[in-house]
Length: 114
Image 1 (cartoon, rainbow, N blue to C red):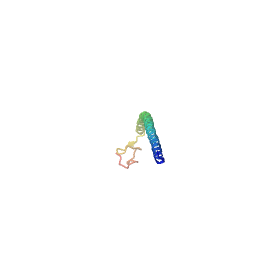
Image 2: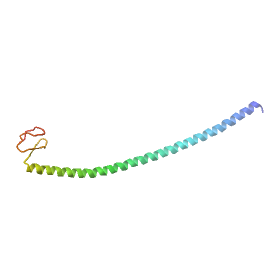
Image 3: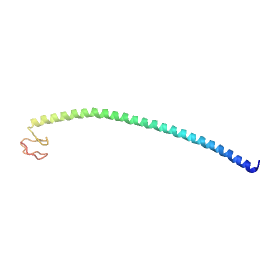
Image 4: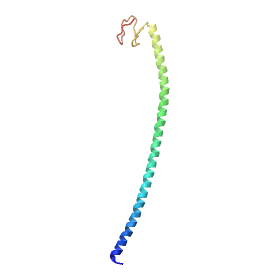
């Protein structure tokens, strides 16, 4: 066997080793990519679930507060009506503002009062 042939055999053997190493590296890289992709997907799902839970909690709070606010607003309106009646105020038919007794024009919108 000539020296040239030995060098060629050595180069081919070295390339096969590199090819095997390259294939192993690609396989390892694909496995790592798949693992990271799966992990990322799980984290994104968990984050979405957290946001949904927060959203549900906020909606429940808002609904409860809305009821309480509406009840308070209704009480305020009723109390304001009672007060206006006792003070003989006139309610504007246009903007519903209460005006002092004897007013000829609405203090809010300027419409003539009956």
